[in-house]
Amino acid sequence: MLPENITAILARNEEWSGEAATEPYEAGWAREAVIFVRALKQPVGPAPMARVEISPDGMHWIPEGTEMQMPTEKDGIAVARIARFGSWLRVSASFEPGASCTVLVTAHLKA
Image 1: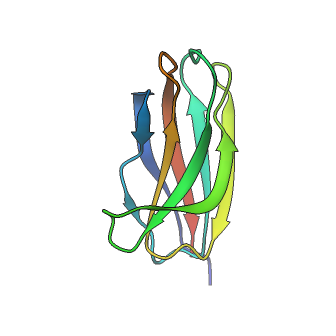
Image 2: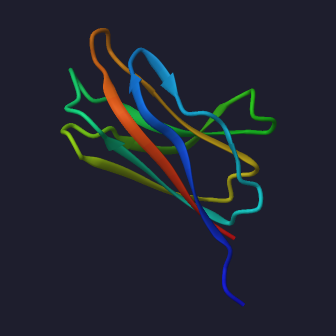
């Protein structure tokens, strides 16, 4: 039997600044996820750590524990690998005033 997998776009061409997060994604069927954050334009200011967050309901979020350094240049990519995450996933980051990054965030999920 071939494993079931899907690539989901969580954020496309969004400029992140201040407190930023992807849309929630329900992935309770998946065993593992690889999440990529790509800078579509040259980031401005210091690059924060992005964090994977999980939720029981897609509304209330807690850090899962996995963090990744946001890209520091155009076309730079950050990656996080996670497993045993429950049903809901998202990525968030807290930018310093004046800092920003235009992102493409994808989740690659496998059953």
